[in-house]
Length: 165
Length: 263
Image (cartoon, each protein chain N blue to C red):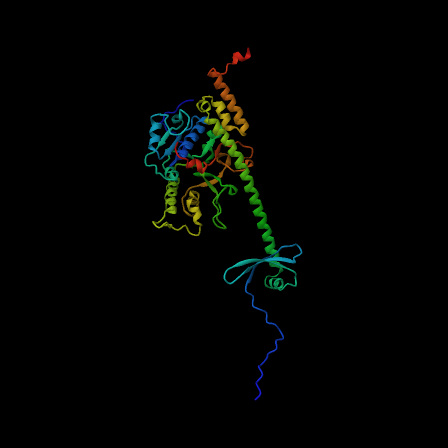
């Protein structure tokens, strides 16, 4: 008895494998619109970023088919705007940090000046005001020195007349 | 300089609050001194949670545990310690108890007066407003944006307010709502919800005030367009001053100074 031959089906066309991920937020990454960046989202929630190059790439074709070039153009423009805002914010924060450091140096100079007993106890209001209003540490130092000189003269430690002789 | 009698309270004055730490007590007294340096006729009230310091002030004693001017007590016209809560936000408790019948300028303790224009500060609150803030600079703030459409804009570290029923009621609500916002259960969870806003903002009294001004019918007429020279916070860009001199500098006491142990 002849053995029955197993039935063989010849495959003439390959079924496309179902995609294991969804494309999200694609945008162009070069001016010639030949390179795109897209987020791949998997069913378990994982996300990864893919770089797709070449118009013959099946993923490239699939993204264009799903979203259309117009959406990619819009996403690209939005991304550039967002990046510019981030750069601006970063620069502003850096400037603010620098300003903060400068202001702290100045403020600490004033604090130190007012920690000096002779300054703290002084009744020389105009000079004390000048120290508080000073805009640079050097100004603080200069006015403090003048106030201290006056104080030392008044207390007899510095004698004007003797020096003039 | 003419010395005002301590019990003679004018219509307008400054309110400063100091609680919990020596660093805040000292800062408040230094701030008062800097105001008096430029504006000797001003009237200053300090709310303080230390009855000991209040006693030293009353008796004109110079035996504080930290360094201040020898005649520090003369720079403070009124010092209140009765019932002041030992709370980080004692300020919110004190605001509704302002002794001034006209306008009050509230100042955080970590500020310093630097200009004689301070004597014009009460004129900054126009007749048609009850409450006036400076604007927060988002580039210099930890948090301003609450949602995509909601942002806190008023800086609550310095403001001018009028003593009228609706504004005093707002100040009372501010303290009450802040306590609710930060109340925790025994297990460490939050007692009250704050809606869709992140829990990070619970600690900010600015958030409480923003909520009250945005979602409650307070009847308070307010704005946040006071120039930043009146509350120039450390980190602001100098060009924000627009060639004007700053009147109050807001410096923020470093954490290590706040928590420094007594010598």
